Image 1 (cartoon, rainbow over the protein chains, first blue to last red):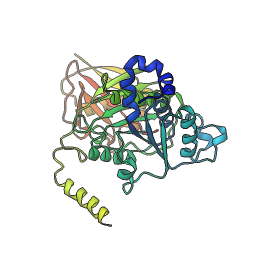
Image 2: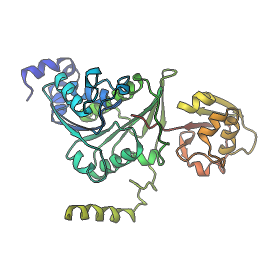
Image 3: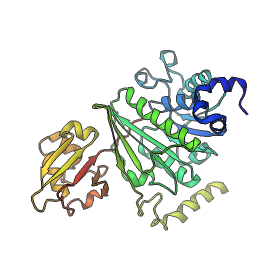
Image 4: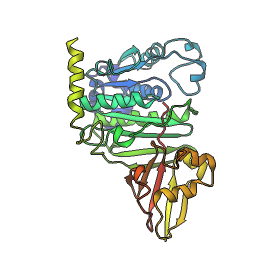
Amino acid sequence: MLSLREHERYRRQTMLFGDEGQERLKKAHIFVAGVGGLGSPVSIYLAVAGVGTLTVVDKDVVDLSNLNRQILHGQADIGKKKVASAEEKLTALNPDIRVNVIDTTIDETNAARLVGNADGIVDAMDNYPTRYLLNDIALEKKIPLFHGAIRGFYGQATTIIPGKTACLRCIFPCAPPKEVFPVIGATPGVIGTLQANEVIRYLLGTGDLLANRLLIWDGMSSRTEEIAVTGNPKCPACGSDRAEKIPEKKEHSLNGRKK
Amino acid sequence: MTAKIRFFARFRELLGTDILVEVRGKTSLLDQVKEIATKNTEGYDAIFDEKGAFREFVILMQNGRRIETAEAGTVMVADGDEIAVFPPVAGG
């Protein structure tokens, strides 16, 4: 049930999807991996929309050079843990939601546990190894992965629905090289907002998701384009030809549990 | 008899957005993209490695269909083709 305060808070959006839609958002739990350039707008828009539980993970400390794009953090947060700053801001924006914060590095030993019973994973990471890991967890748990990535004035986004769409490894079998990437804050603003919009519509079950569609944002000419993507049967993460890889994985997790 | 080569993101900054090319008989995707990229050293180096093969992360599409870059030397450019060359980005 929505409280009186929630009714008033969400009045302008329940005009779109009713109390029923709002209840759906309230019941949802979304895992946001990273609260940097992408994670800032993603978590802000999910919080103010009333997504009931947000779990936010990041290992970093706020640095002055983050502030051109990481709009969840400000001058006064320099030196603070990003998740502490995120918790403070998100709770201040909307005290009617629950914000769980975890100050850690996402790796193969903890990823599945950190994601827990979340209804979806937002990829707001800055590297492909962690993205591939989140992709594996999303496939394993059969929950969507909302992918976004940026560089300079350019960005990309797609929504991965396990069993229905290409997975992240089908689309990007090889990671681009690591670098200190240039960026203007408006770029993760555009892509992160798109990701939040995907999450909201996935939870509401409305509209057309970026499923099997890679959206490309060209901020130099203000154009968006799309590339149709398809699953790769030989994909090492989700393909039908990966039979020999599955037992290996299962053994791993069994061993982990025995310990 | 023309085909359109479309570059995205950083490739676009280095090599241009849409390049129209004359389709003259048998030119592979690899040779076609290479020919265009040769006009800008930085652009060429962004797409191809020292051996002249596509860098492994480059995404190549022919009329919306993914072409494995390792096979681009054996796939021919045809009249009316739209070839997309795209670098995934990694930042967050």
